[in-house]
Amino acid sequence: MKPVRSEIYKNMGGIKLAYYREEDWSRFVNMIDDCQSMHNSWAEWHKAFEKSKNDLIKQGFEVQNVVVDLDELAYYCLTHRIPNDGKARSALVLTK
Image (tube, rainbow, N blue to C red):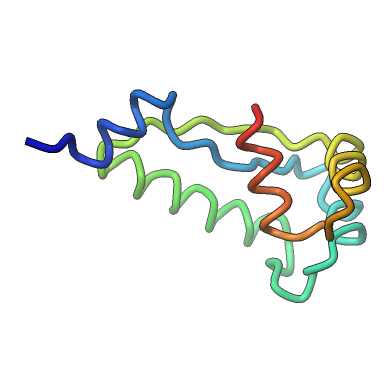
């Protein structure tokens, strides 16, 4: 029998979700290349974040919040020569 998806992620240390601090929000939105697809406020983003996190937990996943350091994010994108978008942020979070 194949392991269920949640068991596979448990063996990998769970699902990592990017977490942005409220005090970083303005700087964050001004530095990303896909700001048009981002929530209008930290409160809106945080509400969606909590819903996604709780949905994953209800499905049996272990969820780890990864606080994104904005200087590290900028450096990561610069050194990898990639735009600062959702794909880059996800890739950075997976290294944690």
